[in-house]
Length: 112
Image 1 (tube, rainbow, N blue to C red):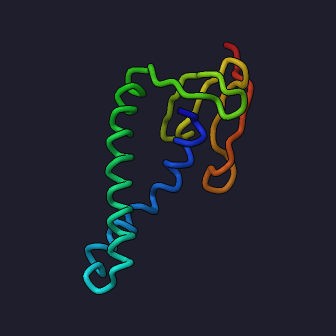
Image 2 (image 1 turned 60 degrees about the vertical axis):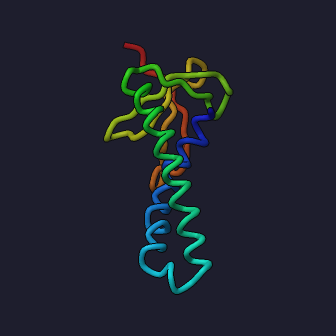
């Protein structure tokens, strides 16, 4: 799986929470809103199940994804300060920058 796909899915997946709540508040009144809410809820559940599986590999330090710049596999990590990030042997440290972290940036890895 590409890191870019999962990164942006996580960023924009937060909109699934309020959209899935539509079925509880206005779903009985409007059919289209109920359908949107149900699709959002099903998508959210699927992404959560995938996320749990990937979380086990992430916690073990064995989660690898394809680099968005060179398509080579690299280790995925994350913390509270930098969010989700990736280390690619060729491109370096890849993380989100800019407003809301919506732009992926590659920086050389600092050698210690």
